[in-house]
Amino acid sequence: MDSREVLSRPAPPPDLTVSYGPHPDHVADVRLPAGEAGPLVLLWHGGFWRSAYDRSYTGPMAADLASRGYAVASLEYRRTGADGGWPATFDDVAASIEAVPALIAAAAPGRADLNRIVYAGHSAGGHLAVWAALRSRPTGVLALAPVIDLAGAYEQDLDGGAVDALLGGGPDEVPDRYAVADTANLAAPEAPVWVIHGDEDDRVPIEMSRAYARATGCRLTELPGAGHFGVVDPLSTVWPAVLTALEVLLAGRTRKDVPRLRQGRRG
Image 1 (spheres, rainbow, N blue to C red):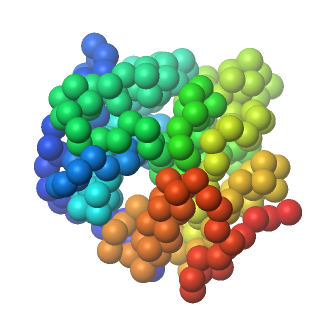
Image 2 (cartoon, one colour):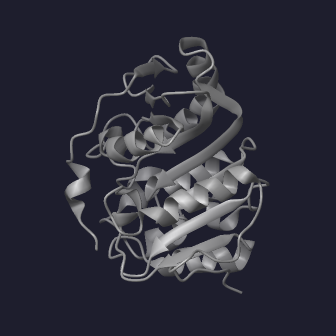
């Protein structure tokens, strides 16, 4: 059910690209709905915060959402190996949530509903989406296979030292940075958070999401048989779960069941 093919699949070009700062990575590709103003999804890509990955692989996901009436901004940010890491990556996330919605409103008036905003992210981007929601209050947060526990990811050496590269050391070496950046040890966002994770993810252990759900009471959907990339692939069989989560978050209500998919709060 899981394929990396989505990482290189072509997507229609964005409708516009906005710049939220002076660095070349201070940009967001924006895809707009065809009709009336749609809810705005601010979308952070993954890749363990490394410069080897960029926003391009979110193109198929963003294009599919735009075809369904959403305005989607695929956000770039400085990553490790290219001017990123502590604190630049986090500075960029903070700057983007402040600037990008207004930039879209100015460049494409009436195409994005700024009263309905979801922060969404995949993998490392899922961590950034939750972290961003601690700085402002979106309508909801959708975290897809997120690296939600930085100390745990450091201890497990995920992606060969990704968190070490991001924060410049382990929890015992730079505890002040983990105190600010590690969403597993921070209060839950005030906005509702929905986590979706495949139970066959071989990149980010699903137990991270289970532990976060137990600690915060957030919604957790477990996708049987799904790996790391199906949650961002509009051609995957689990894509309907992502669409359902977005709809429910934007409706401002909770839902106890997702048809044909096992999910629930872990307590």
